[in-house]
Image (cartoon, rainbow, N blue to C red; front, side):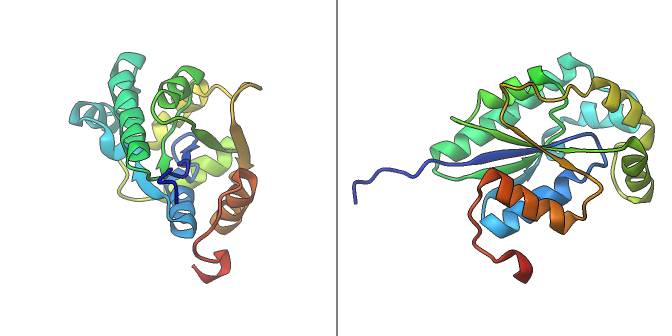
Length: 181
C-alpha cells in the first residue's frame, strides 16, 4: 500500500423544489455509501422564514449558503469521504460556487414537466417551500451548458428508476444491490 487516497466523488442532485432531489439523493447514498446531506438543512433561519412566507431568495441570500455547502463537500473530500447533496443549484453561477469546494463535482438534474412537479408539491407535507414558489424557481432555472458535467433525468420516472439511471449514468459503484434496498 502506498498510503494514497482514492479520489472522492461528489454528486449534487439538483432541480426545482418538488423534483425529487432528496428522495433520489438518499437512494444514491443508500446504494453507494456516499454521505448524504440535504442542502435545505444548511439554510439560516432567515432564509427559511423568507421562503415560508413565499418570498424567493435573492443571490445575496443564497451566496453564503452555497459557500457553506461547497465548504462542507471540501471538508468531506479532505477526510476522504464521498458525498451526495440534494440542492437546487438552479443557476450556472450557483453550480460554479459549489464546484469551488471539492476537486470535482458531478451534477444530476431532475427535470421535467411543471405539472408533474406541481402535483408532487401539492401532495407532500412538512416542507417549508410553498408550491407558490415553483414558478419563481422555474424562471430562475438555467439548464446546464455543454461544458458542465450534468446528467439530466426525467422526473416522470419512478424514484427507483431515477436512482438506477443515476448510478449507471454517473458510473457510481454500489455497495448494496439496487434490487435489495
